[in-house]
Image 1 (tube, rainbow, N blue to C red):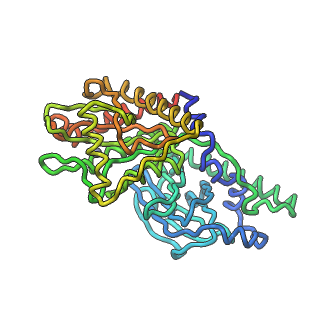
Image 2: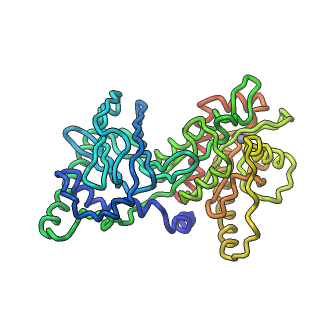
Image 3: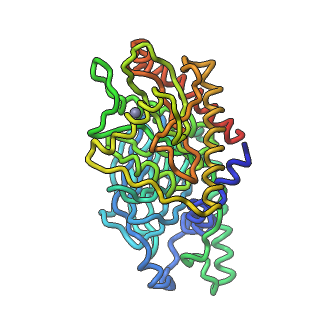
Length: 421
Ligand SMILES: [Zn+2]
């Protein structure tokens, strides 16, 4: 399925976002060259940093930089002291500069500072050697600003030392070039943007959230909690393959409109959107996992009920579903839709093939129904119903982290196959 990625990934927002590595590395190891030459109007148009957050578990760490708008970024490993510096191209910051303690097994502290006229650097001082596993920028949506997310994972001391040495060598090289050609503004903002290798972006969408708990077990365990736990596990597994950038539509207990979930996938040009759910049905014998793609004309009664249950969320929350798009006359859009639908079906098939031997699936697990959240015309989209909270065996599974991990492993395998990995 390599062609799927190439086709859908024709232009990505990320490719344009990353600085030429060398130019930024020059900044990493040497005092910042004066940037008076930076064009005032370019600077004015840059966003500001709104907030910076660092969090970590005992195996990973994450830096989130809230931004007014999407902007370019870069990162570099530094030795003595062991650190990873992350630069964003901005005109300033609305939070205080300075050092902030973290003090856990991964990050000892971080420092936030301006770097020249058009950059803010967050330096993460490491308690243990780590490397950047993935970094991506998300467009603003809802009340959330644009965000740079940088995920770090542990690496060996030797690998870290080699990486830091390589980064330093690159920096020296580009500094030399700058010396030989003094008139050439090698650090001039905007002159060094370049395409960089990108990985497919997978957007995992944990169903429900906030006031909308979704389905519920008799003991009051809510679907929104299960879907988030599953989504995080799936994200972790996909990231670990090294082949994907993986984002979540929500990483906490917040309410999102279905429309916003679709929008998020489209604005970020996700290569695959996968919405996670677990449902209930009046017949408690119905159980098993299934994978849906969208079909407005689907006729299966149970599928219809499930889709309606998922779709009515927005109405309950006091919002109207937006009108369906007016008849699309543009044949190209129609072709795109058709191709997206085909890709969605292929992705769903791969996932189902992996699920079958691992978990209990419904009879005909590959299904079609009119789920609103699957409507992006340009992002292959599937919806995974993990099982039924109205069935005792399924319920037991759904609340078990081990079962969820097994299912997430199967889904991750299916996704990897779809992308030809
Ligand atoms: Zn649901």
